Image (cartoon, rainbow, N blue to C red; front, side):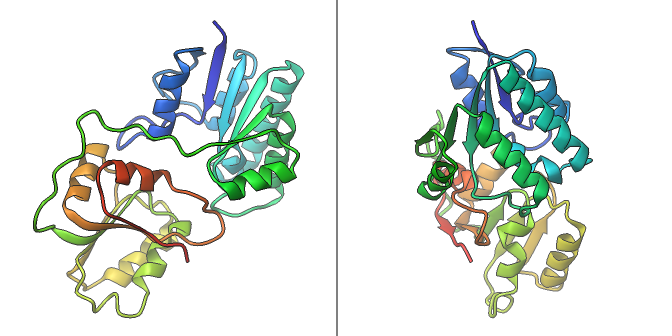
Length: 273
């Protein structure tokens, strides 16, 4: 049986795992021997790529182009480039899943270098939206556009409270492109009386300070700066009138968190600035 390697790992550990990669590996296991089936993800993404580059027969790669923003990003970029070149020399199949038009943290010489290398070594580029498909076609790629996969929960849609504990829930890792600070800065939000809960970890010190300043002294807005598990998220969704995704324009073409929330039965509002 051929061996397949999926990158990145599903970030299994404290908090929620990324269900996209969990279910992707589960689906692939019907046809391939999956490397790292338990989503251990102990290594950096670039080192995991390098190790797998001499082991796997098929590579399914996501977010490799964001490696320059990881710790020791420049070094990791060159390790990733070496890994991709090894895959090419071994004449292995590479599937590049292009999730976003560009990395959420922006573009630079290193992200462009990795993106171009990914296009050049890939046998197939998979996209979930028409705009990312068009980007890939302009690169001359063999493109498969398909809807973002979803897996319906076995236990069905949860029940919801008649009197929700909050009006708006914002959940997921808090990053600059997600527009949380911009939403809280909107005229009238602070005085609206809306019960707003933010549930998600932020590792950006400047953004953390900005959000803390914006919600200081406002009893109707709360923020739990931590990574919850999926059961807690589902419970919070069931206690919310609406779930909001106030993303910034530029790097977004879709949202896995939005689909996860819809599958929980949440009433979602997706806003792109």
